[in-house]
Image (cartoon, rainbow, N blue to C red; front, top):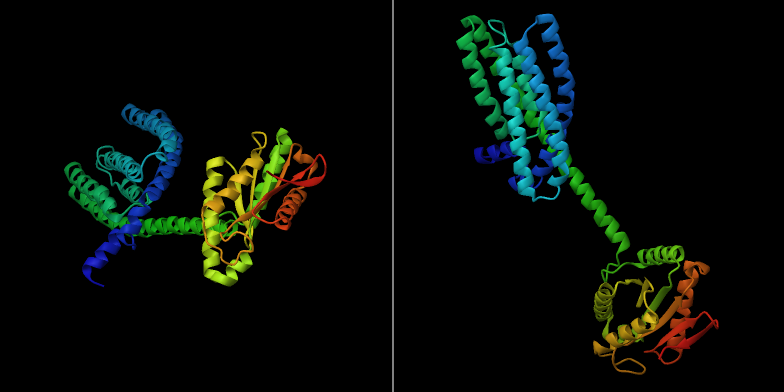
Length: 394
């Protein structure tokens, strides 16, 4: 591996630039959750420390500074809680830049507070605790290594300068040595932790996409892209239940391509597939424009279902779809009657759908379709509940 490739891999946590940039917002959002949790913890910790400074050390300066930090933590907690939902509405780049700026601010603020505790507040004592807390600032957040360097290196230099300015040489040297060790260890741990976080984010995203693809595949007809049989009947059941609860009429329409077997035998199966895709596309567009649910339920058979909103809409839809397929003017030399592709339609419309099971609704619409087939095809028939009979739609 060349030095350039190594540095690129190191810079982007072992991933290529495109992958790292794609998921950086999710990585920064995980930081925001960390900040939110830390802020809440710091409020209670700082107040406890303030009580210690006030009653045991009688140091008003430390007490006031600690209380101010507790209030800042509390304010930051509420700001994050309020802004978090809005981040989902902005663009990926804007959200990432905002989150990154916020984490940079918190990191610098924390480092400068630790610098104060390890130098000015420590007087001539060693700053071991404050120095090792610098590593906590490095590893607590998930970010790219160059971002960590931008935070830690300047703060480490400032700390070393302040330590040499305020302390004896031997103690300042000891602080410098500890700072160097902490920065190196912190960068190493941070790189591996951030890489694991980014890897988990990518894995979760890929798993989510795979689950969506699997769900979409299980519910979608592969040939036409419409709802498959399972999903279409699921929609029928859902609409039937809704209509029963709201006392609304329901309409179920079943369609079948006339002489489709002859078409397949004459033109070939690839042509038959293209025909079904063409009819499915037309039906999908019609369904979307008219607020109805439609799907392919097997072979050359399609179904549409909806809650009725106007009288005789089912008859109107049945005829419009029949005429729309004929208007495609697709040649069908092997047809028994018309020499173009046509469909037959069976219709079931009922005012009280709660009196029928889902299977019965489909069966009656399908029986109406068979009547249309038996009486010459390229026509529409419906089931009449009042007379318990099947009649042609004019």
